[in-house]
Image (tube, rainbow, N blue to C red; front, side, top):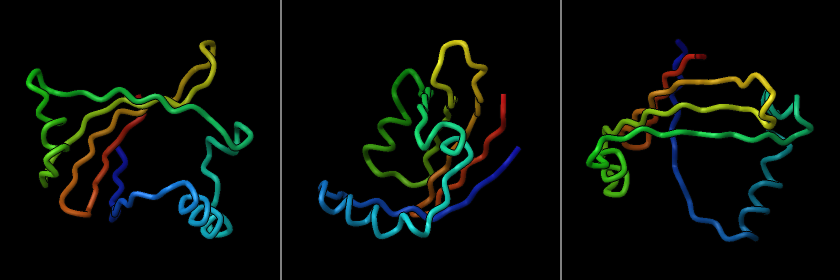
Length: 104
């Protein structure tokens, strides 16, 4: 099992601001493993799990701290490919996000 911790802060950007930020940081970024294999582009599919009363959805919309998300994510473009499948648990505590994951 792998674990990541990072600080997250989200901002609303219009299209011009997005391109300005993207172009400013691009020279400092390194492409991830998947984009190096797929000419810079790849498809990510995520399946999130919730309770019958939508507890995770409600907690997210209310900005509650200590919330948890469960998801399965794949990185694959073609139906015939053997996808990389990752099961993850994400926990958010203020601006700190912890993610635990393992390959399935």
